[in-house]
Image (cartoon, rainbow, N blue to C red; front, side, top):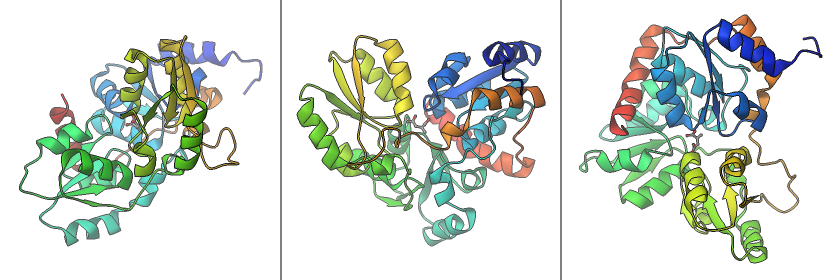
Length: 312
Ligand code: CIZ
């Protein structure tokens, strides 16, 4: 790539030429969020992907999110900036062991977090995101127990909130797993007026200190509408970009990892693979483009549509 190229202007030109829509997750770099047509969480981004009339969806997030867009909009070209942008939760849950897990609990309803592959979705009864998991679980038939995969912390939190019996897959997010309760308590002592907002992918001990627990979208709405000047944010810190834009007079402090961890340790390494240069190349070359075999797509679509219906 010519280093003098104005990448933002070039991406804009390609957006018009290709009739493309750029979707970005809250965990993307601020410069990517700023050039996106829409910034959101998995649920809102899925809804956008299902409803768009663009010819090309450029999905700036991680691979499973682009895959959801392709499942919902199979006629569109869906490109992602980096084919290696994976997810530790997706990695933790492979189709064979998951099918065995299901087979061991044949009477259970399989509720699966959207952070998983199309193969796992196809083996599930309903998909959830952190925005709608509680509502969906509450609406499921009460006489059946639930299998929840792949995030054990989110599953445990939803089980506690709903009182439903749940068998949890033992997965976790490599970022949220590392927020430190001990360091959080020390930080709270230094900032006694700060309110803590935590994502339910955090361990239970961290969530126990939170004034608010919710999805990225939920946390964003909470800090904007709550009358306080300072917040400690226990989720991937790039969400703070939108918080600062929406409430520039407030202070947002990233929650700490263990003592001695680097300042950027809580940045998701998969989300960080996406850059302006890779977005430009993906749009110019229409690659890497996601494909999902039709037979798999149809099976994965069913629990996703159920999610969209149940959280409408
Ligand atoms: O659902 C999502 O987009 C993720 C990964 C987190 C959240 O809470 O929004």
